[in-house]
Length: 299
Image (tube, rainbow, N blue to C red; front, side):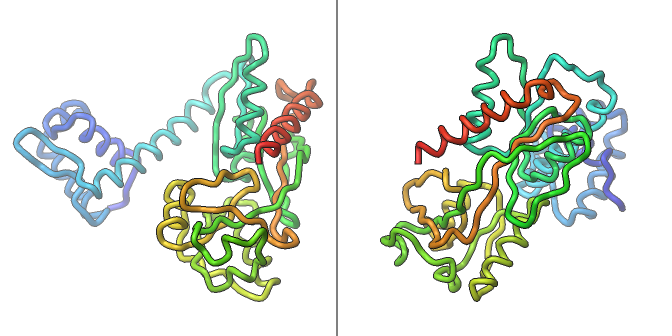
């Protein structure tokens, strides 16, 4: 059986109802038909999704895993459909970006304006943010890219570099290199690395190419975007990772710069040339510069 959106909606209906009979009534099928469909979905996914009991059904741990992703998929699809059909609200400024101190400071400045109406949409991928700008789903965004890996920019979008800053190492606080003021990139050649996934603008390619220029290939054991889990792997299990210069030290980890700053990233703001910020691009850029300077002064 091929998994379809209707199957994901069925799983969510069962979880929300807490009962196969109530879920069957909600989706308009008989309980035996719903039970049979659930069995086929479970066979397709390779595991039991719900635990049946006297008082209804509850998701199994695997079921909770599936439901989290199913709800995310359905939310994204519903957003795509509603975004394509809804009339554009030019009174609301739609700002996107990755959760960085620069974006935080920029959004705070935009909200401080009288009668500001703003929505904020965060994504991990700069390429996706540029695509959303090009498709008219966002009006402006704060993104990052890397030397030699600048992404193509849609014709309806203008960009302005804000700052270039070094990328640092995040180490366990008891690591032998933690007492040094700065370290060499090749000093991490024998370590287990944590990296965030590919972001669509060359993050992995840039890291691997730079490491190879320094004589080694990083041993990437873990791949994740979740910062708490990443820091736990570093603090408790001896892994190392990379971080922005404005990252904070937390218990169990230290941040150290690399000698010569072999890894760098560029902060960029972008906006639609036909959007609500087009006539005040200079002011928008000044806000972003001030937000980055404010974040840099804290570190």
